[in-house]
Image 1 (cartoon, rainbow, N blue to C red):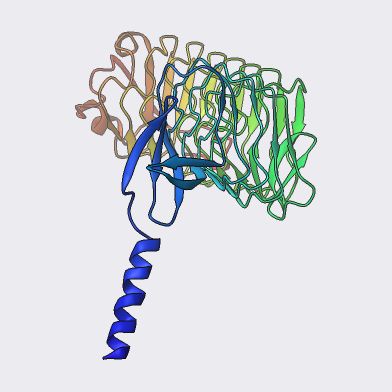
Image 2 (image 1 turned 180 degrees about the vertical axis):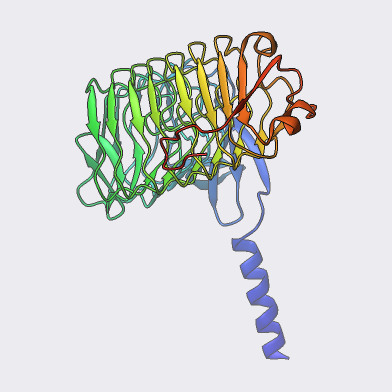
Length: 389
């Protein structure tokens, strides 16, 4: 019986410490969530909250003290009048999008107690100029400093075991993952360290002074919107280990005139090169099976496109607004599926579709391609990715 009572007491104790939030209450426009173990978390705030806000180490509720240990997901999201938040050294976690859209916040001092900074925690904090990562931080989520247009420098405490800065650029300790290149840096040329294998979400986004970025040969992953709106970037050579070009990876690179694709890439994601206005020619290598929705939409100077024999699908509005295309070379025997509005309707009358001489009938009878007025047989055509057809 004593053993049974002991087990019951242990269970009750465990449930008490790990209890779900019992109540929330509001104090000076800040909503706190109270836990049974004597801790509190900042759960939300009035969107009109502005100026300098101070969060105390402890809050009192119904006569009892609660230690404030975290800023929850979206707690201060879109508090556009907020200029600064003073956080206590009891905070260990800053949640997902905790300060998203705090566009007028000019300063944020992360407490030395913080261990985790959530994904997109400071996304669209466009007024931040500098950021320091304390020694205790063990995890920084993707896009934590995305759309920080004024950010010029990120520094990391020398005693941090997981992260490091190199000339103001944020990496994991061994430099295998590049998390953030501050948008406000004014360098025109940047070479990524040779051992970097991943470029994180939005890492270079809105770096408007960059004209050239050298990618390392061992790079295996370029995450979504990694180079979004790098408007002065002239060209890019994507290493051969990349097999997927993710959503929006190079969208808005308006000055880009050349893209050298990796030979093993299989998918070009949605909006991957949307609004790359200066591209005039496009050669998609073999192995590519699909081109995503709006992948090249808005590439208004694009004139010629080479599409590989492996291509199976062209997504919705893939080439929308590419009104100057005059020739499309298609090397597949079987016509790829074309989703709605993949091409501007004027191309059916003005552009020439070149296909293999033994496949012309298939294209002439394909619902996706029959609208092209000019479909020409083609016997041989040199492909720069190592194959002739």
